Length: 110
Image (spheres, one colour):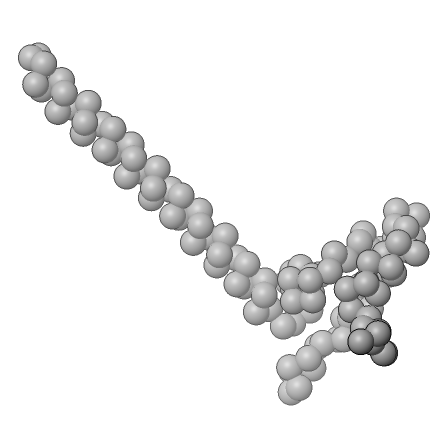
């Protein structure tokens, strides 16, 4: 094979590798985005219940022993109670994190 053909094959191989790499990355991105969209839009109690709450509220729910979830389709709302694994969670620290994120002071020092 002469040099010109080798160069053409090399360029073609590199181009195909780059295109395949881009296609795989795009496929992974679309798959992850689709899954996260499914988790975010899930309203019932059956699938990704904890993940849905964590994504919507923006807090990390610690390890749990049990979940009690009630979904009201007419109101499109759910009520969830978690039994937290107290041996694995520093409850006081967890409450501080939640309070710092969600509890607003009732007055300001302006």
